[in-house]
Length: 418
Image 1: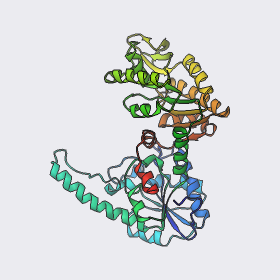
Image 2 (image 1 turned 180 degrees about the horizontal axis):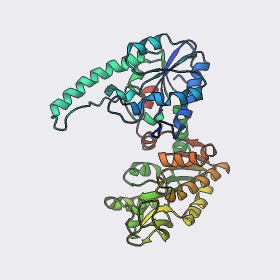
Image 3 (image 1 turned 90 degrees about the vertical axis):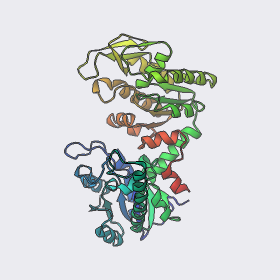
Image 4 (image 1 turned 45 degrees about the vertical axis):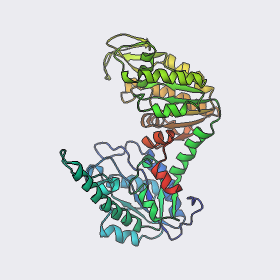
């Protein structure tokens, strides 16, 4: 298989699928440029090798063209990071796109408009009425499939080689993430982001140095159950944090007040305890938590053992004693996987536990542990606190990371590997 380091880009036009789905404020300013920064080395590699780059990405979830989702808003930031000017095409399927890509000289960069302005990218029909019948839906899907093939073929015609560097969308079988690879049987490769993501996750899941500790946070057990089940035979310690910890405490007979709980998952939680015991995996739950009488920045707060939270109060963050308890486990670990916050990270008042945990993971990494951090809020925590360069790897994937961890064969990966 071709790699980005051994491929000859001299005189070649490379069409690169990146993940520039970055958050913008109401003034269209980028509030977190992690994903853009991650893709820059791949683009620079193509240019340094004597090639030119055609950049394609999505932004948000538009149902058609919409100014607030236009990639023109991030053009300046990308140009600044690349250090070269970049042409922008407001219509991926236009004659202008064809002409500019055909005449693209070495060292030049072309940015295509948001791929999801086109229904063909995702292959999902739009505009169907709510009462559309099965036959109408089937016909719409068939018609769109034909259009998607033409859409994919035209995108492929712009270039001589294809690079997938968008791990965040690798779990989607979209035109630009999987289908286009068929047009480049001998000229398709991963970018540095994809290579790095796959290498980092495989290192953790397939050959971890022990002790191996996984930290799983977030609100719902149901969204992480497959990940938990796959990790149990691999880890030595499993720290269950965040909102889903209350489901486990409730299953054990604890009193959790008004805390979030998936009551239909209580038996599942007990089953996980049993599986962990058989596999000699130690499960670590919070001991003491921050509680609040409302879900807001102005709420009254206090501390409580997690198993005796009073009625009218809810757990919102891991308390300092819990972080210290987990610290002992993490500092003794050689491999650390962290996915998901340990508190209501969106509210600053309840983000202290997640931030403190980031500090601990960074300390363990400095001591020699290999640490992989993935998931929106946990990644935001290490970035905001300046710890991104103090952990071994920060994943740019959200859903893709979880699915890869679950053992799912990602379309974007399979399309390159074959």
